[in-house]
Amino acid sequence: MVFYQQCLGGELLLQTIGSAPLSEKMPEAMKNLILQATLRNNNLVLMGTDMPPRAGLIKGNAVSMTLQCNSEKELVDCYKKLAKGGVAEHPVQTTYWGAHFGALTDKFGNHWLLNYDTPTQNHNSIPNE
Image (cartoon, rainbow, N blue to C red; front, side, top):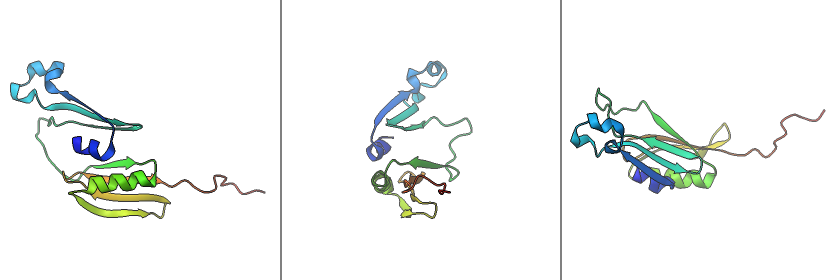
C-alpha cells in the first residue's frame, strides 16, 4: 500500500488486527497484520487487507483494479509509476470508445486498468431541427 501511495498520492491509514475487537480471538503472531489499509486521494478510495481467508491465500488473475483518472496527465503519471518493476501490457492509447486507456501488471502481480474519459468537444448531441 505504501507503493500505491507513492504512485497515486493521498493519505494512507493502516489498522492492525491488534487494534480491532476480533484480536482477542487471534494468535499473537497475527496482531501486527493489517486488517484494513485505506488510501484516500480526492475521490479515490483504495482499500486492502493482508488477512487471508480460512482457505488460505490463492493468488490468481481473477481480479483487475480499475483506476478512473481525472486527466490524461494523471493517467500517464500513474501508469508509469505503477508499471515500474512490473509489466506494461497495454501502453496508454486513445481507444475506439474515445477514452485514454492503458493496462499493466504491477511488481506485486496485481492487474490494473487505467482509464480517462476524454471530454467531448460538442456536448449537444441532438441536431437542430
